[in-house]
Image (spheres, rainbow, N blue to C red):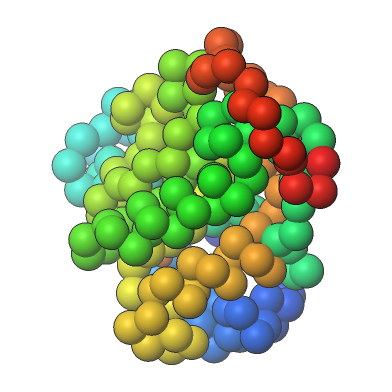
Length: 211
Ligand code: FE2
């Protein structure tokens, strides 16, 4: 298989105080790594032992798909954050957010609301969906890929991602992600790789923050 547990893109304590070192270590070693090891065991017993992760995601069903999806999503999550992240996106990405959500703050409000209203375990995403940017949530291990959507950024809404640091206050965790952790350069690179094919609607007359 051509997938493995890659090193984190930053030290395990680099996201403090917003994601504690203990949270990140447990999340990686007791969740991400366990999903990968369980997937390897399952794949090892199947004829798909030479498959790549994208191939498994495109073809597998049931628990093999769910494990592969969790492996993919966690790798994507680590890249969605960085130390001293947050702030304002660069002009091309900010413009795309304005066209789809009215303003960068409009995106943040929708992301917060969708994350807060999502019931149970899952993920909140910014995606490209048929040429427009959308904020969506998925349950458990479901992926935007299965809906034909391209992921730009992700935040894990499973309690293991935030409970040590925020207890039941998911709202504070999401706020910390948006204000201090989101890696806008990663979002912009994903958007460049998967540009919207048509504007969501006419350019609104509001200003772009920090653009
Ligand atoms: Fe997780």
